[in-house]
Image (tube, rainbow, N blue to C red; front, side, top):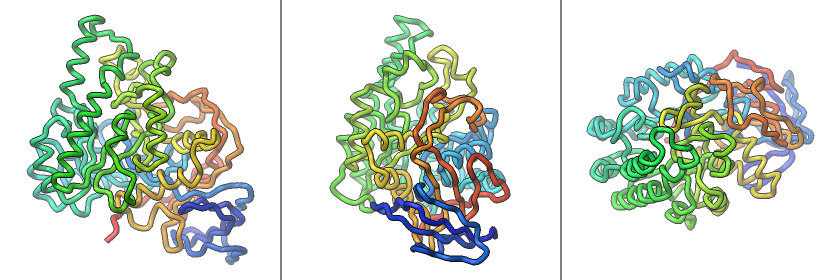
Length: 447
């Protein structure tokens, strides 16, 4: 184990309050929180003027490992995550091979134990083809099952398109079900309409009209209705429209909710006006939509209809993005900058630091029932992020860490910097330098 760390005189953002104090970290855990703490032979970190958050838990990433490692891998993307203050992630099943069996899932955990600098968890993929196997498995110990990204492999893999499949899964699955809620039939009709006018080279500005509000809303509404019928735990991934936010409730605590949702940072940061400048670089599925949607999503995040902030980090090579509309890959790298984006909203007076921590740290741990992470508490893993709120910097190619080497945020100046990131008590990131001796740990569920 590394030597103890004593963080002194830092502003602790945790569980709805900000208080100045000290933290003693030893053997991977937070051992003591208080004032004027002392520890022999500890590494001292002076927190004066800085803030400390629980490490960010990103509940939706595509780190591309195994099988798509020319875009990113568990080492490079976890490194980018840690530089951005994210200490844990949950990765989606659309790698190669798709994670459709427990055996492949176990192999992926083994791979992460060798490569990932951050803590890691993985969804088991579910489609109509492996539905019976998933239902027969004891999935109660899994973080969740998901169809996200699997529609790239084969048409018809979106659960939201098939009510019969959802009925069977929702009635029998023993864990959280996280789905990509769009209806492919509506999308295909819209695609055909624009192909008739533009051929294969449809302007990207029509992306949010092709992958429309109706395609999202109808899918989300039907999935919620079926989940409520069976009292299933349903999580709608990357919500993208203001209309959908009306389908979620905020009158009960998260721990009591069976229907939950999230917003990804790009749906809060960009709107359809940005397609003119950035084009296919901001082509995501579901699409970035209107300014009204962007504002509506933030409103729902603040009033607790939306439970989490995630990234849907999905790196592609630049040449894969800079193709005509139908050929351009959907998704982009953003995990290195998710906390910076949310802190920019703080500087604009839109959201509090306490609310950012709730949505990016506390709530992912609650929703996925992750053991001893997501909070700054004695006895919890020392996953921590130290931030200077007044240290402007600009995103450029030279400071990007994602393997694909580009970002739609290039040229953006942020007001805050992540200065240090601690993972399981190890100071892994320190003012731009990495200590790569240790590896992350698997995210375990509470008993």
